[in-house]
Image (tube, rainbow, N blue to C red; front, side, top):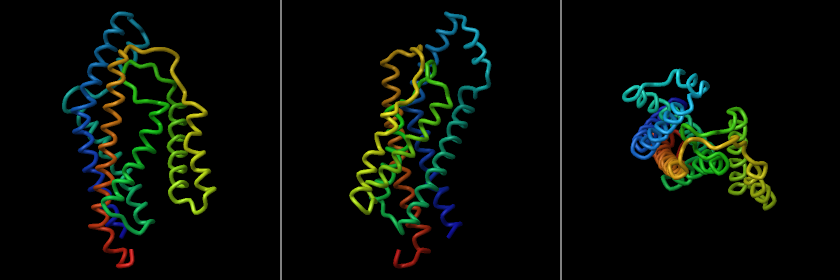
Length: 228
């Protein structure tokens, strides 16, 4: 059973990660390249020593190396989230492709859409808040969204569902950490990047939900028995 779960997770995560890389190459990467041009132009105009020091930090070179690192990161993320979804299917006793899409949509809302309402995807050259507060807020928002959705959908009593409804907006009432000022990226480019990032991640999560449901029924479900 464990080996079948791992095989199902690897197949689904690899598939979704490769799809994400392909969509990013078309929709997201060109916008990042444009933002980097503005960033480099701003550094050259201001001769910012801090920006120059950051520019000397290691980063993958353009072309194959950058694509390879992006693909690896996307596949690893796909495998991790696929393991989470597959484990959920085991606990629920089974899934079909329709429910797989719903679980994928739930993952998108939990890990992408809800955090993006307070901390939208940022381009190079932006002015984000410090890293640690952003990470803490992101984790709290994902946890509150996951818990709230679980209580609303699976809560056995109405008051559990009510608690879930209250839990969903809580991180946004508290507020996300924000940067101190404006960055170098034009607003229209930033808006296009946010939209492209959300659409790309939606595709990723729907593909992940569909592929995990398919591989689960193909590899794992036969071992759960006829009553699953």
